[in-house]
Image (cartoon, rainbow, N blue to C red; front, top):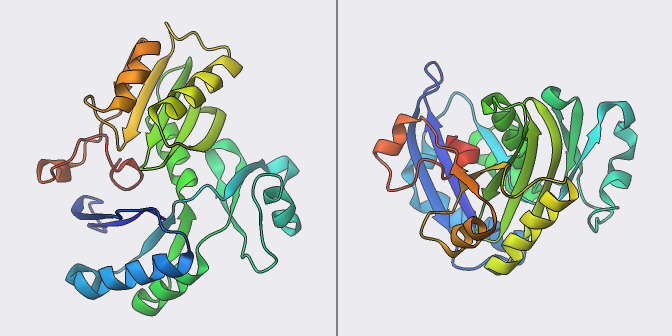
Length: 249
């Protein structure tokens, strides 16, 4: 609800050859407003009018929950979400399968956005951003001990804790201040009995060494790093190599 971004990649080499990001001045209040914004972007960005062999869409929101495969029932999607968020009778609910953790990610996609994209591109696959985040982090993580990954967006952030290929915890939080930000990180660490002097924290997303968010975290946690991408596109971008992890990581 606070931005739209896309990249173009070569279907054979998988190399990313183009990236564009639109960050809205304010977080939007409705899906109608979001659709209007995206329509404006499509009208002004010629790259979005090219023909593509494949289109893959990622919905980024906190309208989701993870359910282990052993407890999953496709007929109970609404009941899984109603414990976490307020759902409406008209909400369309779907799920992604995450083979790496033997679980389903149940979520509400933005149907009106999907419909508009279908008008422009035809059929496409889509997933929730948490699915992509977990899959990418599990692929990259080599450490056996518990590691915290924090993916930062404009008004929200995701925490994923892994022990090698095993998911220990994941959750998304909204924040308005640096105090909100550090509170949730320290609370999660405390719940999992992580020693702030010992465990490793890796940042991805919209955060930098100079930001107040980074500075307050580094005040409390000793081992703080950035998880950088090896994508060659960063040589052309005015962006940190750990930014836009969902698309470029």
